[in-house]
Length: 207
Image (tube, rainbow, N blue to C red; front, side, top):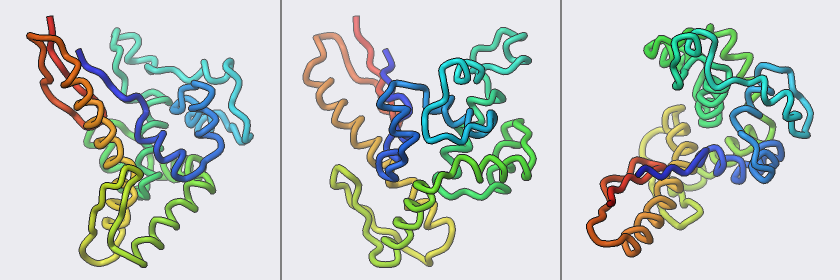
């Protein structure tokens, strides 16, 4: 059995950045990646959530993948909104993201990536990025919401800033899963065992 903490990183970023649209998406149990895709591809600019009728137009699979019977699709609007939302929240540049996607045979133009970046990086997330940068200038120590500390070394360049932003969410996801792992370890019946933790998920085997 594999247990996965769904949309964990974007959830942490939403609350840490105090982004009203993303927080509302989570509190009302909407698919946050579909919400972001509406912003990126459906010209949704309101602070309110898109209606379900509009969210339903954001498909999990593109036409080609659906025709082939593939359930996993890396070309759909939802998937691209997810990937770009993560990357741009951590201050990755459009050109770098386009190069990464091309290695996965996902072809997006740099102009399109910049357009989406301008839409999905809300004022709340931009302010959060600035706060984290100011924290780095003040101290190279960063503490996540569960108290884990990390020290950053080197020049204050883009790569270091991206590492710091991603650490805010990714270290916390790992710590949450480790707490779940401890609870699971003490509650598993006999002949069951934990196999592995993979970032935001736990895999265990059992009768």
